[in-house]
Image (cartoon, rainbow, N blue to C red; front, side, top):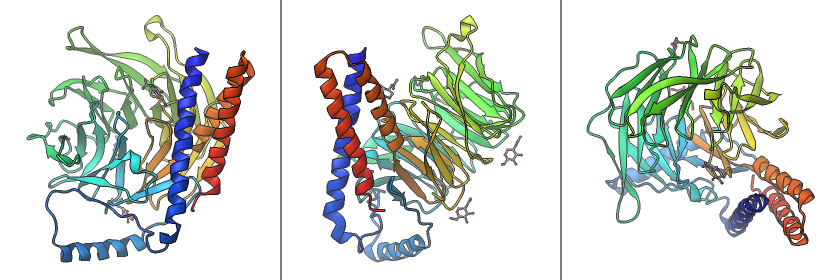
Amino acid sequence: MEFAALVAISLLIGALILLVAVAVGKQKGDLSHETEQKEDTVVEEDGGKAPPSKKQKQQQRLRKERTQQHTFTHPLLASSLKSHSGNVTCLDFSSNGKYLASCADDRTVRIWSTKDFLERDHRCLRANVELDHATLVRFSPDSRAFITWLANGETIRVFKMSKKEDSSFSFKAAPEDFPVKHKGIVINIGIAETGKFIMTASNDTTILIWDLKGEVLASINTNQMTNSYAAISPCGRFVASCGFTPDVKVWEVCFGKSGEFKEVVRAFDLKGHSAGVHSFAFSNDSRRMVTVSKDGTWKLWDTDVEYKKQQDPYLLRTARCEVSEGSRIALSPDARVAAVSSGCNVAMFSTATGELEEEFHSVHSEEITDLKFDINSRYLVCSGDRAIRVFHNVPGYRAAIQDMQAMLKKASNEAMRQRLEQQIKDAQSALDTVFATSKN
Ligand SMILES: *[C@@H]1O[C@H](CO)[C@@H](O)[C@H](O)[C@H]1NC(C)=O
Ligand SMILES: *[C@@H]1O[C@H](CO)[C@@H](O)[C@H](O)[C@H]1NC(C)=O
Ligand SMILES: *[C@@H]1O[C@H](CO)[C@@H](O)[C@H](O)[C@H]1NC(C)=O
């Protein structure tokens, strides 16, 4: 057990050191180009090639627009992804960790390569949303398709991603969109990691459960007056919602042995906030949840319970934070760090202590629309205007070091002690390097 954990942490620290080494090398090499190459170059794959003159004009226009863009710098900012020409409303990482999808009111969905986050150039692929724009986007579990919510069509459109010979993708919309069923404004969509269902949730308290072909399997009335957020748990078993009432409600979507849909049953509630809940998030194993409320706090919950035996989730921690009407909360997959947005600001907290670790002000020019950690707990990303900000999850690395220090105290044999000591030292100097060489 201890050994397995040690190996896992060694891997994490190994990745961290490598990542910092790459970043440092990159920055040294690039210093001389700093002034002439301030803007991100974007490589686009969008089928037809525009004639150069048109492209040049477009670039001039883009350059002009970009100079008018909101600027933000911070030592922990790893990069800013800029190629949307409209406000970005939603972000999603693919479960294989390779891609980040973003959608904006510029009628495009962009697919970014996560391994480029520390590069100067950020490649992205573009999928056009014909005659509409997507407000929400989610990858399918196999990372080979994504679903979008159409702002005007008010329904789901499915896009298939097929690999081309040059290993980029082409995107193809399914011949038919899902039927229109919602009356209220749709606030979130999701695909279960099991591939068994799709969820759409509107602010009028209706959640619909669909099969992958667009047939409605069930309709849930959340009875929360108005809903502000809803989502599927990463394990694909549960759907949860929050809104005007102070509780977060969780349902199980049940399927039979041969995969046929059976029913949706109430599983458990998170009870403890004293006012409406703006949003919530799960850890990647669905055993922890975080919630953020109008009552000015965020809470961490242990949801690893057997609700069928009447066990309730345990409240593990409550901490104060700045909140706004549209506050979002994100939990790192390893559950070590919670991030909360309030207006244009983001705060990062340790879940072990509840303490505020980092604060970023005016990250975007508009209210933050989405906030997510990548699947390896290395980065925090957020949207709010046309840019996507990518932050190093430094609080997560610090927490990993603290966990190693705790293991060191318990370590019984000398070899393990020495190894831990060396790893802590290396990780610490790697962290110092993030700050020392940060270009901002
Ligand atoms: C998008 O952002 C711009 C400023 O960057 C703002 O003026 C505009 O209102 C935003 N659009 C929407 C639909 O929120
Ligand atoms: C849903 O959101 C829309 C747009 O923000 C708003 O006009 C409407 O009143 C909301 N509905 C409920 C039930 O809160
Ligand atoms: C959760 O993420 C951690 C790394 O952050 C990974 O080691 C673990 O396998 C993931 N668990 C699941 C269930 O995906």
